[in-house]
Image (cartoon, rainbow, N blue to C red; front, top):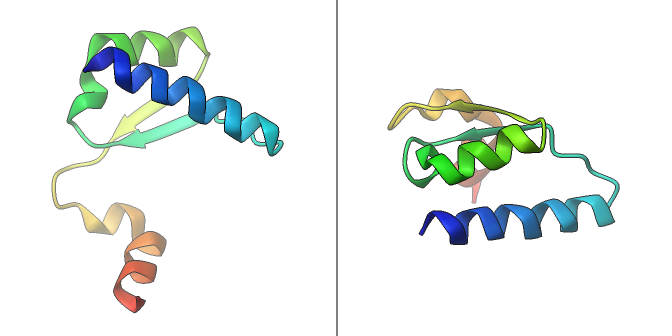
Length: 70
């Protein structure tokens, strides 16, 4: 499962670059993103990563507001 997540990250990075976006940081949950393969790819791409706590909706207020409004 870790390999699939890394593959998806690579595909997302390519999509982002096509739209002139350089992904420099990931803010993720503590699930699949804690896998060593994902962490190694983040380091290899010179990106950074932080983790949010379970149920920590206050860490992404803009997205939570948009979801609530929908």
